[in-house]
Length: 222
Image 1 (tube, rainbow, N blue to C red):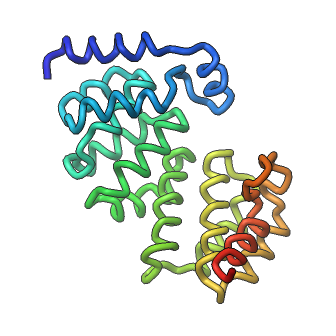
Image 2 (image 1 turned 60 degrees about the horizontal axis):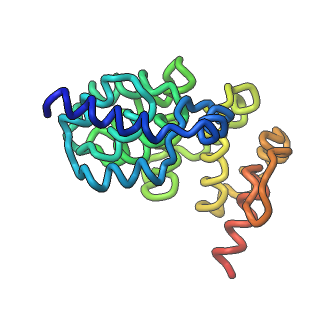
């Protein structure tokens, strides 16, 4: 894909820059002002373009990287490419989309889950926890859920925000999906009180693990 195409895409993204959207995004740690609906519309028009995706990622621009993740071919990345990208994915939305739209679809997902889980970089470790949460829900065989709860119990309270959020999600998922561990998961959540006071909009479920677990179990049994 010619460089001019990258330049054209960057110009199109720049034209969509909205100061109000940027202000909202910056509150969440993201440094772009492009409406995500419009970003997805560009991706729909471009369709899958792996080479263009690589070039857009290489710009380092957050909106360009988000678009890159929408038009890439997830299974085309090597393990090392994905590892490097994760270590470059400093913005929360880029990190989230990289995990959910690309890594989860890769043949390297399990290898990276294990490698990232105990990484000294808490942002990288949070990706390992996110992939572990996916396995807790979909493929728990082979996971030591008691050991996961031990780690959450020992480390979640003092973990940096993004890692803490990922560990809390794993805690809730264990409680929701595995009745034999539910009482312990709720007890850990109640004792640690992580995200207990998190502001939750009306009609949304609190991320506080005991509330989250009980609400999802209630819905399952309704």
